[in-house]
Structure formats: structure tokens, C-alpha cells
Length: 248
Image (cartoon, rainbow, N blue to C red; front, side):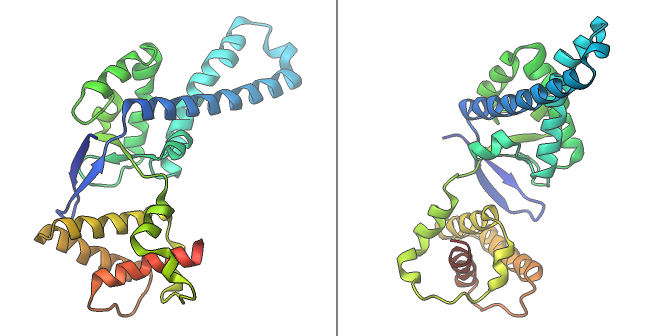
């Protein structure tokens, strides 16, 4: 298992498990198949509506059968990662996500660079260049990642199971949630909370204690909670417990 440590803008170090080459290939295949299906659908509609007119010259055929799928894939990668916070459809299925190595949130320019460099990484080289770089680079980066200062991490797919596992769900029978507003968060948020607790429990140092404090302060603000208990670890575990009960 290869992992990296990323220092956040709050000077807190968090460890992430890097996606393997095989996982990224499967995610790419899913994305490519998705774009192919969309392209086939668009081509079918165009042929039915204006096929006789459009296919009178070779340029139109080249555009429909080559440029549309290629640029459609690039646009798909850009749009899906921007809208889904670093997760294309393939990455979401494989439990992967794009993150910046400097701890900042990836932005439009980062996702744009990653999408454009697919032309070199996977198009012109038939994916060989991307595979070689991901398998050999220390942070498993293709050219698109290197230019955007990003990489792809693995997120556990069985999020609900992991949350329930640490809290013993069987003991939650009849439990009344204390913070119902927690249902507005996502499973990835709860996984992040769980992992932060786990890191603090394993390495009780100042950096991880500060991470707990900042996480509690952030959650208190976005959930608009007036007051939190003095025991911040128990508060975070209560949020996870509430989330499981409210969403299971």
C-alpha cells in the first residue's frame, strides 16, 4: 500500500492512500465507455436529423466520428471532476478522488490541466505514457497530475460499514440523534471525521490534536451548533452516530 502525506493549509499533515495503476485504469475504462455511449447517442440523433446534409464531406464525418468522442471525453473529464469535487463517474465507482498535493482544494484550472493533458497522457501515447508515469513516479502522477500538482487517492467504498464498525451499530437501537442537521453532510465528510479521529487515537501529538480542534470548529460553524461538549472526540463520534441513524 503506497501512501502520501499532505500538509493542509492549516499546517496539519494528513495521510492518504494512493490509487493504484489498476484502479485508475478501470476508472478510465468506465469513463471512456460512458463517453462512448453518449457519443453514439448524439451521432444517432444527428444522423437521423441531418445525416444526408452533414455527411456530404469528409470533414463532417471526421468531426462526428473522431473529434466529437475525443473532445467529448476531455469536456466530460473536466465537467465531472469540477461538479463532483474531483470524482468523475469512473472515479466515483472505483472510490477514487483527485486532490492537490499542497493541501488546497483543487480548482477549475487544476481540473482543466488534467483534462487537457489526457491528449498526451492517454491519446497520443495510447495510454502507455500515463501508465508508465503512474506506475513509476513516487506520487503516482501522470503528466496531467504533475502540471496541476495533483494526484489520485483511494477512498474506501464501504464507507457506511466502516462508520458502523467503530461505533457498534447494534447498540444504537432506540437511539435519538442529538444533531439532526448532520444529515446535510455527505458520507465522504463522515469518513474524513472518522479518519481524523483514528489518526488522533493512533498518534496523539500536537498536530493531530490541532486537527481535531479545527475540525470541531469548522463543523460547529457549518452545522450552526451553538455549543459543543468539552469532549470533542465524543462530539465527533456523536455526529457519526447521528448520521448513521438518520441515513441508514
